[in-house]
Length: 263
Image (tube, rainbow, N blue to C red; front, side, top):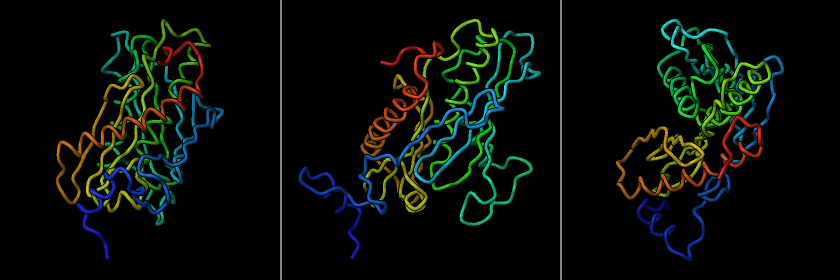
């Protein structure tokens, strides 16, 4: 017999209660195994392959020596992103998109906003950095994984520009990272995979800087409303997960001189 959500919530909050059982055996506060690999595509100015459990996203940065037409003559660059899912990144074939649809367009804009939140657009002249994020395998959290990998690809594109003598100052003020959280049977859980996301009563994507400042919150009550207490709990959980992603990003990137020292 399935317990009602209220009973599960009380059970999980009891100090001596065993951890709420997730279908993959993870604890509620656990990320899926995270792996960030630099230089995944040699021809790109910067690239990264990010794996979050079975979700894998390839992020590649391209530098164009021109700003968008509406930005020219202002001495400012631009950072943007494109996102797509390979046809067999899911259990059934996803048709190859000729033009970005509503969901794709929304994710592209989210990735771009997240990267620009930590980028000094005056530091690299009138250039455009495009980050292509291609989902190789999707098992939930593709947009959050894309942001985590895109930051690495963007950083290494700036390394390329630095090596060419095209930077006038450090272009990045911080790292940026993202995780998903949600309520499953009333229990807050970190980093939802597809199985969990598809049955979560509430799900949320959280984007934050390494300093702990929010860039974006995307929260939805899928099958129920949620309280301010629920929201605070989910944000606390997201913050703990993002700290782990930020640690992995900084460990990978090291002291390049393009990022401020982490706290």
